[in-house]
Image 1: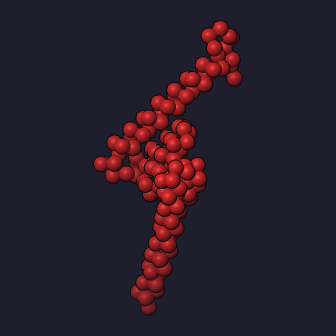
Image 2: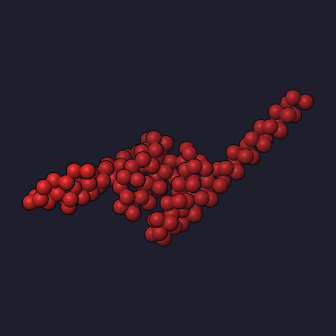
Image 3: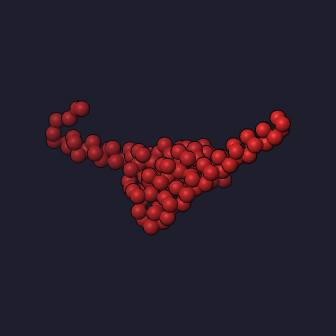
Length: 128
């Protein structure tokens, strides 16, 4: 009797886990379709949901970061790319590291340019 209850519990647990993975995969696939159409802003919520449904999906985090990069939202791209790096197999980590470095440099350059606009050389410095 105990074995039968344990087997039923195990079966229900596996069914629930696989249904969550399918839901996360559906969200990812919808986001990927939008991403491939160049609709990066529309893809972001799908990738975000896919990361919530399956927090171990390196691919969902990678494409979330890439969608942010495509929107020139450098700062928002860094965290999902770091998570993708952590979750990815070693052979994919170099590509992700290159994206993280690019996003960091772009964010710093963007910050530098924005600072120049607020503080041109012939005006007093603006401090916030």
